[in-house]
Image (cartoon, rainbow, N blue to C red):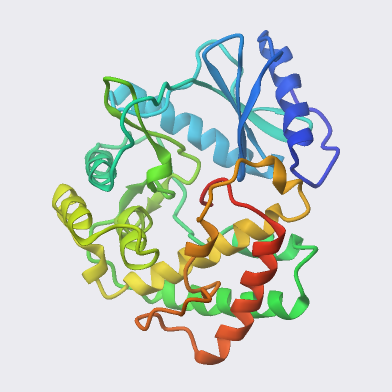
Length: 333
């Protein structure tokens, strides 16, 4: 079922309207649905059934969502502990210009997963034999950045020019990298927020939207390396356990700092796209923004190992200040 796209923003109202229409089409009762998150996607928990309704922000993401559904079906067949589609529902239908999928609700009341749990999940995921018929796109970590810059309406043109320059430079640096690990299927957005532990059960990996064929180093950077070396949110002992669980220390690889900077610009532009789209409706994740790395140049100082030019820092700091006043973040991009 396809309906006409009626708006450019992605507010709680926009997402809720698509959710109600999708539930009506699927024969589900949307009354009492609760917004769980509003970020790159909107997530609603239904009160009437153990279902999470996931709404992608615009119809251009339809190929990504179809791929996500195909990956979910593969992982379920393989017995991998991951998110499961809710059966007997129309997946990837488009309502009001948003792509909608239905997922089984996961009771994540168990102890919070650690970084070693994430490393173990990634090792298991990377080792799975991918079906030949499942064709994945080549990974492009900066694919959505240009579109976010083009659609930014509240960011100063000088700031946008700075970020476009950084985007150009980072594409060149990324394309020149020599990777240490064999390439293969990757999660693409691996971080601890995409893990849940069932009460009395295993750790479950979520969110397959960024799944692609690419460098395994990316998953290790976003999952463990950047939280350790960039955000300083992972202690040495905990990081060592994660390295042992996977068997590779990505921070010792020479391309780590380039991937770190790529991740930081994606995080910055993810925040930008939420400005003016009712950001106060998104559950706040206190403290995430001050840790958003060197693209935004934290007021506390830029780590010496980054390779940004000193002349870039005032411009990046200005972007940081403007965005910090304008938005809150509900999850990583």
